[in-house]
Length: 67
Image (cartoon, rainbow, N blue to C red):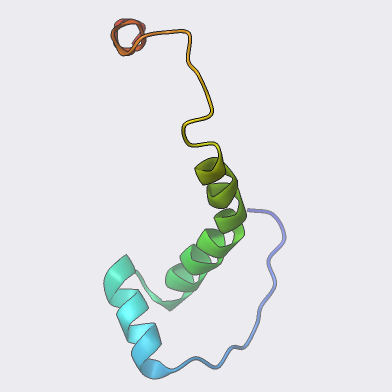
């Protein structure tokens, strides 16, 4: 993971509880997961822009056979 930075964050209690229930993890891991999702959101948006614009040269059957 590399270098870590300790932070203090104030969050609404209900939001934290909902996030922990959704993640099934403790506070630290829930916050880490949320930050990872925010960091990845730009990549997800760029992938959505490519929808329908990329042509594959291999069929689904060929991909399955390649496992």
